[in-house]
Length: 354
Image (tube, rainbow, N blue to C red):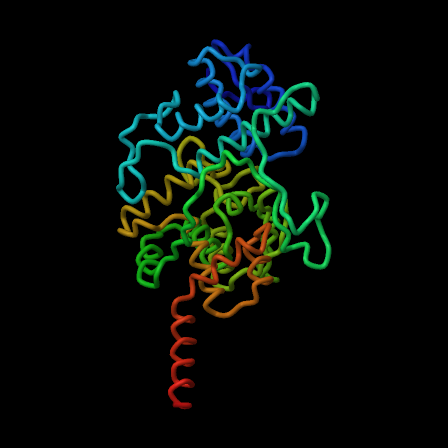
């Protein structure tokens, strides 16, 4: 079995795929609900792995129960799921791992849970094998909004979820930023990196910019974020100048309205793809020697700079396009210089009273 695009939709095809036609119906349902193609594709690959495992166990969707799910999650942790390159896999930190990361396992569980929720919606007689968590004691099941609605806890997740390590985002220091940007030779690459570092855009948001989304004179960006959410972000003056130079002297002639295009090769003039962006950053990491020079590291550097400057949390959330304030609050822990300054000031006040 494999995942392929057909008529703008993602489908599981190949030998044995007929036994999992419900999965294709679910992927079509997600597309009808206006989920982004990237999200539908991600769900498709996660469900493809699940279907391959079921086929290897000679099981169908109707035979899946909680015990089967536990076996599947155990297979993910042991890296015995079909389609994985093998157990000798290195992480970005150079450590060997024998299974999928907890976040990956939980993402696959979320895809499976969504599939069975869809099946129950179509046929209430179907039993959902994914057990749910317990409701919070301090809020009712219908609590969604109100004066403190932004602090409400999310809906209970499955008790099968793995505990994920909470790691703080890694920001680049000044020397790494300088070294990385010195290796950027084209105006296009400088503009893309600048939008991540000085405007806090995600890689997908950079690629989703159209020429008309950039107001160079007014220094504003119309950013299309996750979940088809739009936000306006101030455009840094230096980045605006770089984008203007790119548009005037480097951007290829093209009928495409997208801002960043392929500069050379047989696809010259076509919109830059996520794979192309990864290739560009991989190349610049090698020549600059900044191993952590990833698109999201530049965005994290922007977020940490806001936190160290004492920017209001609500403003940070709007600039970064976070759905929940708790995600933005992580950057508060990325201000060691600010924390140390406050600590030293407190110690001086304490010493003066002794």
